[in-house]
Image 1 (tube, rainbow, N blue to C red):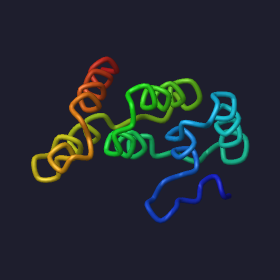
Image 2: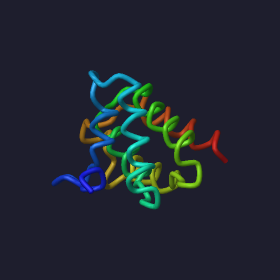
Image 3: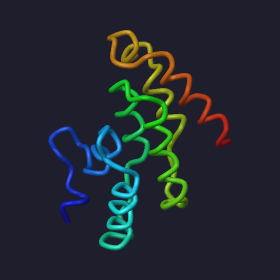
Image 4: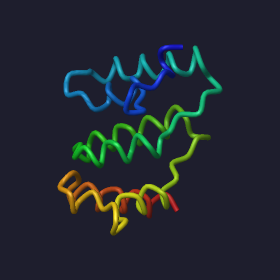
Length: 117
């Protein structure tokens, strides 16, 4: 149950594991395997995790790690690319304007969203 419990910011342990610089890929895979075993029907908020990483200026390779994990382990769950891009580029809430996301992250996500269509 702790695997699907969100913290005060609405994030899951999986997001923090991906975000961290100190978690080996074998541990990430173990965590995903636990999600699949313990709560196989739980729908993860992939769109929210992508947005959180982008807003936090995570490197593109960390975002790609999340995307690879989603594709390999949860191919039936989808990222709502239109919502992600709209949220990150919305003029009123544009995260780049307030310094939390950089053009490189946004460009990376736009490229990935186009490649999935």
